[in-house]
Length: 436
Ligand code: S3P
Image 1: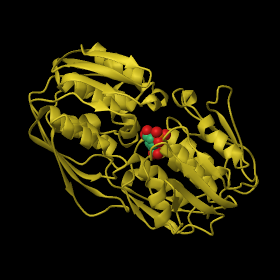
Image 2: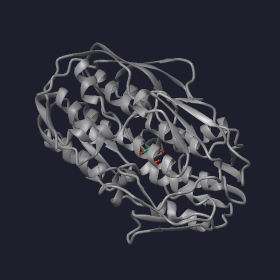
Image 3: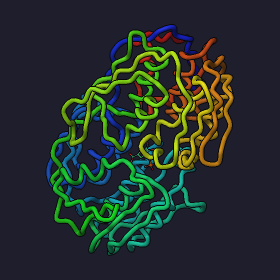
Image 4: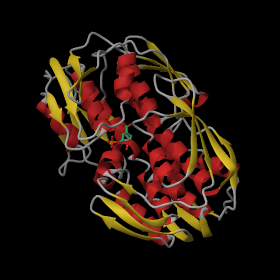
């Protein structure tokens, strides 16, 4: 386990090109594998999660040429019903892989059962949320007792379309069901309480699939003939950019510029929160990348942050950024409240518990709610020692707490950052942060 101390920084400044988007990289590989043509994926995210997905695609029989580390991979698909899923896929830490690939496997021709497994963190995450809708469509998908991985998925049973009313907003569940719908008979519809990120829908449309919309639902009509996914250039990941943006808000002098970031409105809710907290953040939109808005974000040090309240309908557009709102709240004037974020309890760690624990460990006044947290801002934090609990976003949160603290923060388990942002510490140091 790597422990690293992040010292207080009086100022950070510069430009960072954050890593490519994790969600879009997973989808480019998986949709490439069921496409009818060879798909060039430019600028894929090199991370443990996305390497697991590329490995899965290869094991299912798709062609994979090139080294992900070279910045360019060609995935040669086997068509929408042409994969041969292997007996076991190790999804490592990647919930997105496990959930999306299940929707693909159920639609493949009859064959052996595939067991999807992962690390201890993934083994604690709920899979009934995908097993139940897939079973309702006619599939055989069996999680372990308690509804968690390992997950046994049988290909080849006939699937029928239907309307799914999801109890939670989840792009992973929505995507799983829509991917199964490609090979189902009739229309498969999904309604979420609040719409989640729409990367899958955008990519399916780009691949020629008629993605339907009706009464606030999205759907597909199956079985589809085939997919022709155009080449994908992956833009920067807003969820990684969020850490650099918040570093800029806390200590950016003259400022931090984050370049080439995906600005899908289903992902950028944090920007609205920052603006209402009084932060100096500007967006410069550029041309679309991979059918998604993209551009630069500039963030400057903000002397006075105001507390805010985040409500349930806002959560899906900032679901991975909520930990940062906890830290911002601790450094703001007033009481910050996040509600309707119960989904955080089933992320890579129980992020309500781990965020509150981290904030308290650095001297903040924070407390858990069932579905969120309350932070009574004191406009400064002392410092201390924190644990990532193997959760990448917690590791990076600890680092930012360090640069904004009075005495520094030691993060135990810093290596977890590699799940989404392997160069995180280097980028923070290039902006002027000091580690020990
Ligand atoms: C993701 C969706 C989100 C997010 C995760 C990636 C995706 O999960 O937390 O990091 O790529 O679809 P849910 O949509 O399940 O909340």
